[in-house]
Image (cartoon, rainbow, N blue to C red):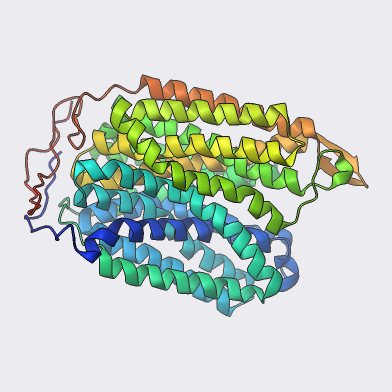
Length: 505
């Protein structure tokens, strides 16, 4: 399938202020995205009272951003490859900022849910930013920058929870959304100033039919996964949603195979180097997300259950904060491991460390010190794994498809997190006991959840080792049917040369 890139252009002086700030500014955008996902969590228990809505309606504040993020990430990634990554990145952050403004101005639950759906567009910030880094950086700087960009997911989540809890505790809840709106606006301004538009584009017409089909299929799938525990896994709505997802995605798959410019290049995805990376992303997303879910619930459990610490939401955020700091500090280390051993080894090592962290949690989940230690070890493994996944994708796909391919990879992580949430909820519901007349999860239920996550992490590590090794030098992806070199770069001039597209096997 042919692809095209735009004409060459001079690179900015790498010693200039804007060039030096490109990486920090993009990382700031990634942190904002993660903060946006977590800031609403401390507010959920009080939203029914504040909005006059039911608890089930309020839960859509989380579900709406999950669904829109999953749908928009591959769509906006493809749009970035075709129309400009910086342009679409600005659109994503602008939608997030607009959603914050709407939330800050209303207490109507319908408008709040709509605004949260707008904010879900920010999930595409990370894959778009990673693609910009590939286009703009020399290979020797790229690994570290990509690792930092990947770690922003954990950093933002660790910062967002305690910060939001503090704001909600000492100010009106709308203030939290005004703060995120201001942060989002600053992110848009900084990206406009410091981040250049990549000239690497793919020509052709955007696959609107493919985008609509993928959206419909994902909404059915993720809605069924996220609401199955509430509506009943055997209920007619859930069965209907799963059936609809299978049918719609089957038709969508056939359309993608025959489209001239598909939204997702399935022939590329079918190659082990890319397809196994996506499978590993799904499994890693599952394993990582269980840590955050279970830790937050466990430390907030009342002391009457025998294992709970009875911590407030602010204290819970502080417990998770070291995990975010570790992800920031270790991102350069993960980049060096990938440079020395290859990203698939880094991914396998990260998965093993995640499993080790859950082993610590199984050994002792009563002591606060051990809980924090186990959660931090899981975060160390997540840093290694999440930094390796985009590096694997960058080595395996042509430059004109990096945003869409990374978008699909992030989508797989999102699906893994959604499945993890449902699985953890099912395990904890199955292992409950009455405390003060209320059904609460038992410690055994938490340990089972840790064991499941550890097992999934080990499977992810095994999948990583099955990914074909890459003998190519960094920056020169090798397909199974031929080699496609990245745009050539010199110290003073960055040129983009259009070569022959990847030949289909």
